[in-house]
Length: 379
Figure: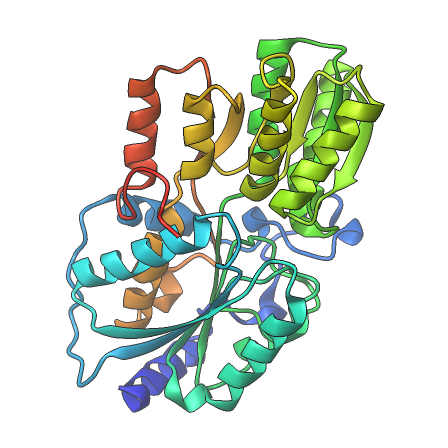
């Protein structure tokens, strides 16, 4: 299987059609390029390829056309030990879609928490040393800039096809681009939740934020939201707390906001874990009805909190799209159709909120979690 797969990759590279050739980027220039250390999806995707993969991912699976002497080997390095069920759900979506496609596989997971950067680096080194054992590596970086060298090294291995989860911003300085980036646009999500909150809450609001870890993801989820809400709505930010994407960070940040900034009526949280910590603090102080709070991602934990009246809104990803699209990308590589894939895959985002009926929330949840199932996952 390994030998056959290598031949397929060499054929694709010879045609210079794989998006993983870093020297060919960007396909088009955009304003502000000089200020960014990364490319935007629209300047690295060839026209129509993203839409085609989105369409295929949403349709019934079409069986893999080839034959396998043995299962493909997939390594996954991601912060799946954290509260967010994003990783577990997309692992389920990946494997169930592979089952539907009729592709035999084996997986090995290397779990960490999002703040355990060194552990992820150790895992990356281990996978590289054993690269001949694997066909694909799926890497969910703890933070993109921190793990850039590891992404570069993994992507440069001739034995591996590397996919990155949870980021959609190909770094300019990478010598070796991964074969694909699979994510939901944090920048787009920030605009979606900003516009929703402006329409619902109006202008001139005082707000605070529980931010994550300094870097691309937080710059978009928190920074782009702040820019949008202050410029469009004249909102005033009283305080921002870096909670490192941890439940404790959301809890501590919210308690500090409640104690020192009583004028705050909105708290924006940059991920599920901090949103859960934040709502815990608000409920404990009986402030969850008077302070509007957001999550990020629309995970099962967040939707349950909305149903309980503890969380008000969240930009909701159609979560299983990332795992399902990755399975379709694996199929395309095995069928020597890698040139049909976009470099960056983006899933859909809408807003789930407390003014929706339970039936409407259920419908969103069924679509988003069509592979991984309804309800919070058991730990």
